[in-house]
Image (cartoon, rainbow, N blue to C red; front, side, top):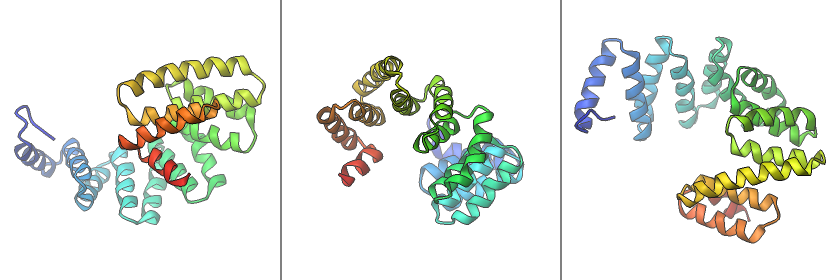
Length: 232
């Protein structure tokens, strides 16, 4: 949160005054700044005020902040409220929350609703679930949608679907395109791209190079890479 001169304190004071006058945009800015700084209680206060003023994104973000503070039941209620109002991000986050807590079957209708509204993450997650359940035709359709929106992880899952369907040529094409993209991003030092590339290479049977990339990604701060290495 900075003004043109980079004066953070002055910018915060300006946003605070605007928020007190009812500016939802200022409330959201204050909430975001507090969240990034780790001041979750303060972020909760401003997100709640923005949500009470009718901001659907703020309602979903409020639930995320509450969940991070160890109150998952309260977070779920807020996401359900947003979903009932037709807010797609809340619908998606509710599905993720339910899946994370073991309610995979119950999460599906919410993923379906978000996917039907064009949410690429919902298409990917539901496609991944259906892949695990061997519903390959529907998994392919959903993963195709997510991949077409630039979701590289959906492409990686799509490769598995295509190979299992016997479409090896199409699988090779998707893998080649995904690899070229991820290699470019990895060369620029993006840790998450390195981890995704490691997953892609492991899928292709290139275990040694995959492990080296995963170690590099972990060293650069990839949480997923670190968790993977700890689990080996």
